Each structure stands twice: as C-alpha cells, then as structure tokens.
Amino acid sequence: MNKEKQDHVLNYLNKNVRYDGRKKDEYRKITVETGIAATAEGSAKVTIGETVVLAGVKFEVGAPYPDQLDKGTMMVNAELLPMSNPRFESGPPNIESIELARVVDRGIRESNAIDYKKLCIKEGELVWTVIVDITPLNADGNLFDASALAVLLAIKDAKMPKLKDNKIDYKSKTDQKVPMLEEPISVTVLKIGNHYIVDPVSDEEDVLDARLTVALTKDNTICALQKGGEQPLSEKEIEEMVDLAVRKSKELRGYLR
Amino acid sequence: MVYKKRLDGRKFDELREIEAKVGVIQNATGSAYFRIGKTVAYAAVYGPRELYPRFMQDPKKGLLRCNYNMLPFSGSGERVRPGPSRRSREISLVTDKALLPVVDLEQFPNSVVDVFIELPQTDAGSRCAGICAASMALADAGIIMKDLVGAVSAGVVDGQVVLDLNYDEEAYEEGDVADIPVAYIPSLDKFSLLQMDGKVKKEDLVKALEMAKKGAMHIIEVQKKALKSKFEVSRK
Image (cartoon, rainbow over all chains, first blue to last red; front, top):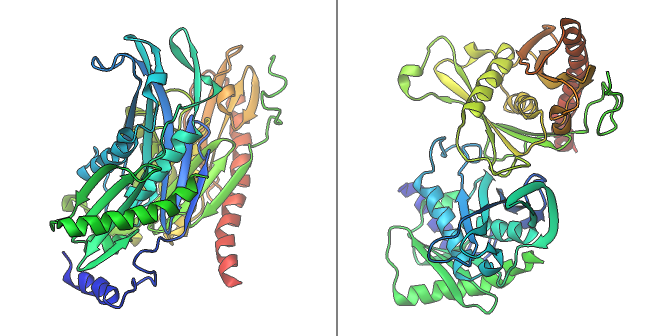
C-alpha cells in the first residue's frame, strides 16, 4: 500500500472531510439513463462522479438446470475494459471482474428480484436465460454500486424478444418485461482508519482497510454481503457499516424512478 | 438494376446521421464518441506510455496498438461472446494500418500508444465508426498527426452504388451486395483501409471509391468540428 497516499486520504478524513471536498457519507453526483444500446433488449448507463458504467441485457433460451426444471436463469458478467482505466489490461477476466460480477449477481439473485418461474417456457425442456453484461467506460471508484444499479435498471428496461419455433426472433421485441418481484440496492461502505465512507474514488479504494458491500431489499432486509480488504471487522463495526448502508440505500433507491 | 430506393429512404450518396464528441472518457489521455446512424463507437487513447514486454521496445520508434471490441450486447442478434475473436483481431489489425500513415511513430520511441475501441451498439459500418472515433481520440490525446482519417463504407446493392450501408442493406437478399469499407486520408489523397466482400465490377469499384472519398471528407469536417468545440467551451 502506498503510505503517502494513505496519509493523504487519512489527513483529510481526520478533519471529517474527503479530499475532494465531500462529506464522508456523501455520494458523488449520480445520473442514470436507460435504453442506451438499441441492440440490447434492455440497457442502462449509470454515472457516479467520473465513473461511468454501461449494462446491457441479452436473452438466450436453453435447457433448465437439472435441480430447477421449472425456472429460468440469470447470468451476470463483467468486463473491466482497458478503455476505462490504465490499470486494467486486456485478456481473460481477472479476479476483480469476477468478484464484481459475482457480487452484483448475488444481490439480484438472493433478493429474488426476478420471478424465475415465469421465465420457464416448457418445464424441464426450455427456459429463458437473462444475461447481463457490465462494461465500465470510465472506472474511478465504486464500480460495485454503479454496476449493481446499472444492472437492475437494465433488467427493468428490458423487453423480452419473441419466441419462434423455440428459437429467439431477436428482430421482434414484445412489450413483455422481465417479471420482477424485488429491487435490490447495493451500497458499499469502506473503512479507512477509524472512518467509514461511501462512494470511494480510486485513490480511496487504494488505501482501504476493509470494504463491505451490502445489498438491501425494499424493506431493508439484507440479501447479500461481501467483505473485502485486508483488515478484519468487529461485530460493532459491521453493525455500523450496515446501518450506514441502509441509510444510503434509500437515497440510491430514488434513481430507480 | 432494381435497387431504386434505399431501404431507409436516404439518397444513394447520403451518409447516416452523425454525432461526434471528444473528451468523453476522463481517465484516458484522449477519447471520442462517434455515432453514425445506429452504430456507436467509443475510442480511448492511453499513452504514449512505456511498452511491455521490454523486448518489444524500439529505440527508433513507438508502437501504435489498436484494439477493436464489440460489447456483448452490441449485436442485434445473439449476445456477442466477450473476449477477442478472429474477426475482432483482424479488424484491430486493419484499424492499426488505417491510422498508421497519419501517426508519427518516431515521436515516441520505446513507447506504445494504445487505442481501445468499444462498440455498445452496431448496425453495420462498425470498423469504420471505430476508425473515426480513434482518429478523433488520437487528436484529442495530443498525439502528433499528419492528418485526420475519415472512414466509411461504400458498396453496391443490386447494381446500385451506395454510400454508408446499414445492416439491412448489407443483408439485402434480392440482389448481389458488395460492401467496401475504406479509410481515406485527404492530405495524401490515399486510402489506408480497403476491404471488400461481395461481387463488384471494376467500374463500380471506382465509383464507390469516389463516393466514399466524398463521404470521408464530410466525416472529417465533423471530426474537426467536434475537436474544436471542446476548446470553444473552455474559452467561455
């Protein structure tokens, strides 16, 4: 870890301010836009400060999982494009992109956001798969929250294509939306020294002690967690971080319209 | 010849609507957005930066390294599987060659200029859109260039020479289709990209090149306007 950078970030936090002038619990400016890729069945662009993330939905049909014969499926994939940050390199998905995809996936999956039973076409034979791809255009921190929001918005934006002879006719979209039961919101809280912050920029992520991503349903039930960072967390710390996540999730929920 | 009216109502030598912006990706040294019709390309330039592995470094000149990539949801049909394909690698190669004549590699020995082209949405003409975005992104990055590069495809649809084919025209089934993507460098009056698939008579090829040249000249004017407007805003 870069000691100078850590001192720099901490010096400011000790004065209760971030070095970009924000409060510790303050998000950067958020904008959301849907329908940004006409070739996708659903798509969204989320901007948090300088971080820009695109998410796009494509559908496939295929055989169900053997243990869920009457349910459709979902897959989340993330590509940390070298376009979006000089540190990202071309090549097969690295561990950062796998973690990002899996954490976003877990929030959607475990909250039962999608009604998978309604994505069954013929029990035991044919079901829909919803595939969501996360592609940051510019990565400057907090890809977790930006991606989770973009993925949910893209799924909500999606219109199912037509099915013809058990194959997808991508040319004709229907008016049918992906059947949804829940709308999970992800908030990532960072611990740096004795401070908790939300919506980190890259420089703050570089010096974090611990990170906790909390996915929450509409009634504030926790539906997924992911701890990151090298330092362990106490019970009290976890409680405080979850409290902050719950408080901030209300604000983020406003962007779902 | 039966192709008397274009499927989307354009004139035979008419480009689709174009939108161009620079400075759209903050982390990059230079960047651009280029939309032509329903085809959208982003380009980000990083560098000149140190080239690894070191044995690739050349003390006499730098390296231009282009990477073309369709985002998984950018095709109107099935999801495009992420990662390089034979197609995307070939397009990266010809993109490189399309831009090389205008970039002075001797200005950055031992270094690399990386150009990343990403397409969130495509409707034919994506390699040309990518080259246009890259041309602007290189200029935005302050890379010393001899000229801008304008790229567009021309072609022959059922005997009629047309400019800037969209997907429906490329897939036209009632007659032969030739698709000829080109990149044009005005100051040299030369083409740095030339590919073709389909069938075309020599006379039609010449006509198509002439038409593409005019299209590319127009595109370069749009590129220049976008580059200038970035600095006009900051003057206010």
